Length: 496
Image (cartoon, rainbow, N blue to C red):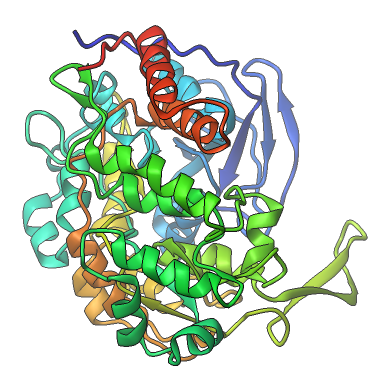
């Protein structure tokens, strides 16, 4: 029987931001135990005190926006700057809580259930827990986009939004309650120089043939790993890189008919992970750690051919870790030495993308509107501009073409295929390759039907036990049994 999540987490100090302004002020709100700081990326933002009632500075109406990164807050600010009439009417208060240690979702749940003037008007959910808010126990708080006055069906068709993203954002009644701005279908992102060294060519078609692109299996990939090992190279940095592809290429999710289900495509991850470690096909790093980033710069144990990931991994992770951050003679306002990315060092520019062995997606952020919000008209304008507008004035066109922030012309793959077809995805980081056709193909093969509202917790339990098996601390059977026990004890789901 399906049970309510019972994971208990301590709430972190919430970071609340005020957008649509120019000056930064830090202040403590003792009543809500929140620290107020700036929400604007690479610029200052005005922090204005909240008055009683629904007015910020006595003139503007407050819109509460909740997020777990600065990305959507930055978009809200951009919308304000492009729409002076909107900016003149509304004050945006942004609460930003990291997802580390499960801090964001308990705080968001509490705020939604409490309601009132401090409740979120617009809130964000990522792939790890989005179904909880679109289809699970908290879905009742999400307003259908059609009730915001958006012609959502025709706009989705016009924008040609990837099917998996729409399904994830659709509630049990069949209404779309959340959409995103990114498309996060995956690819294999590889080093050109290593491909030339080991395979004799860095051409996309050659690398795809070597790794078994589109084969829906891992045999060719393991053959390539063996070939790379012979020349002291790794095919991946760590098994975490493999997991993202395996997890989201499975046919079914963790919960099927109210019972814990281990999809065969996910179970095989245990053997793949162990094989790669035992055979020396990976550097055994952990994703999002210094050793993982070092492999991107070719500073690890062995040179790594590639990483599995969506376009955002290139734009916001690889590209930021493949050069050398050199100190300059300049200092910022706080006296810290300003560093500049030196793209002539490291592996910057030595990369390309190709299709992966299996179709998968990784990540994404969905925007939702609280059905108790009294600012739905305003929230609808923001949501429309971010998720549905496929014109050159919309967020997604700027996002895809690197014009969103002229000071940092970063390109990404967006949700709208219409916008992708209007955009230029060529990147110096990729040796001049246009990444968008590869990721567009990845979006078509992405599958959102294998997600559940419980993935954030179950994935952690699974990865913990796989590690125990791979390290030789448990047999495969012992690790699986411990995994099932953990899920049953924490989430009250029996195994099939």
